Amino acid sequence: MIEIPIKVQLSTLPNNPGVYQFYDAEGIILYVGKAKNLKKRVSSYFNKHHDSGKTRVLVKKIVSIKHIVVPTESDALLLENNLIKKYQPRYNVLLKDDKSYPWICIKKERFPRIFSTRRMVKDGSEYFGPYTNIKTVRVLLDLIKGLYPLRTCNYDLSYDKIKAGKYKLCLEYHLGNCKGPCEDLQNEEEYLEHISAVRGIIKGNFKSSLHSFKNQMQNLASEMKFEEAQKIKEKIEILENYQVKSTVVNPKINNVDVFSIVSDDAYAYVNFLQLSYGSIIRSHTMEIKKKLAESDKELLELAIIEIRQRFNLLSKELYVPFNALVDKSIKVVVPKLGDKKKILELSERNAKFYRQERFKQIKITDPDRHTNRIMAQMQKDIRLSKEPRHIECFDNSNIQGTNPVAACVVFRNGKPAKKEYRHYNIKTVEGPDDFASMEEVVFRRYRRLLDENKSLPQLIVIDGGKGQLSSALKSLDALELRGKIAIIGIAKRLEEIYFPGDSIPLYLDKKSESLKIIQQLRNEAHRFGITFHRNKRSAAAINSELEEIDGIGEKTAEELLKYFKSVKRIKEASIESLAGTIGIAKAKKVYENFH
Image 1 (cartoon, rainbow, N blue to C red):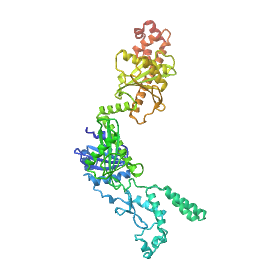
Image 2 (image 1 turned 30 degrees about the vertical axis):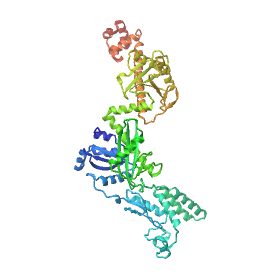
Image 3 (image 1 turned 180 degrees about the vertical axis):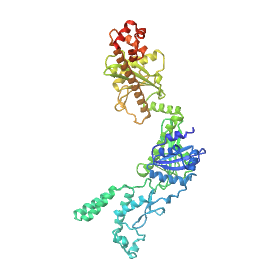
Image 4 (image 1 turned 135 degrees about the vertical axis):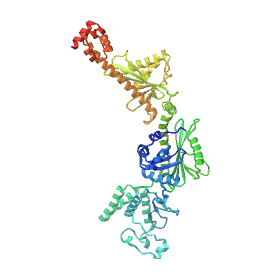
């Protein structure tokens, strides 16, 4: 694989939150860091002087940069923590394990307690998180406490012990923060309804709680209990204004491998994420060069086997975008919604980012491969029988019918071949008739190529819709080239692409590279034609100034301009120098006109 220069790697980093990893020449990981904006943060290592000697040494050793894109900066912080613990890079401080991050626990017990903890116990309790800081957890628990009266004591509230009267009401009951289940003053069904609502709030689902509170408020108001209704209204306002920091990945999702694939005609990119207790602990994207027309399913199955062997993966559950053939002992899940679907979408985003990054790098380091991919993609997108290695685009230019001209621009291998551009003065058309002008220019262009036995393009692009395309087709018919050269028209308003004999246009994706090349062709033809038209109008204006002199015609004006280059120099010229160009009689007339 070609070694990518650091500058190229930096130029293709995304402006997204994520985690970056630095590697040395031997492929050993040197450092893991997080960033709100990957491109800005990683570039800063190479764009400024560092006071720290260790940082300067680190930067000198960096040969390769990898990254993982995540939805938010908070997610990047958690991922950074996991990767540092896993790889323990030389230039990172040793961080604590997952227990250093707080979770919210709904304890598995009668009348469940809700509290924060840094320790996960496999006793059937529910854990939500981890959260990036304790402040978020405290705010969320304060919100829950203000909305629902839940117990905070650690008593064993079994049915027998409550009936035996082992517990007494505490201060929390008298403050209104608890309804006293320890003395059987609150039934378990009501309490569990509150727990269910709290579970929804932690996940970011406020709908059921808001609905319940609004019903309570209306009922209290109808009973004239306005003070109690006001308290419920305050809870509604708290819920509506609070932006919950819910879990990004469900911690129940443990020991799972996620695989996704994106592909084009030549290459496929398979991304792999390894999850442990809802956290990403490993990410890898594999690039696969296609040999034949392999399907995504075939390539994904091959990649899963290779990656599992390479990383010695032992997980028994996989998330994939479609059913894939793997070991029968492994559970394969194709997520359709919820947390599992979000994780799969995150994997797909990383695969797409990697592909885009490779495209940009290859454009610089391997231009032939980049060109081959673009040509193959254009052939597919525009339904061509051949790759459009040679494309020509035509555009007309006139202002209120004056000085009508046309331009033909040529692209080879997706790039402008400016030496082959051609200007045309419209000869057979009078007035602003774009259709007839297009017909004339296309005929002249390909009549000449045929006469000179030069190669014809694989694709002709006409700047205009169905009318312009039809005019160009008349010329191809006259030259018996219909069907030998592909031809399309592109309309400006919605970038519709028209094909001969088809009234329904094709709409390419706005981000499509094929559309971008067609737009570049159209814009280049327009620019080239406008420049020629502007120059021609300017020359016509100068000629008319000279031709207004009595006895000076168009031919004489052209001779003067050819020799003196500008009207200003003609005005400054002596009779003798003028006479040397157009004769003494005409020279006197010109000289006397300006003096």
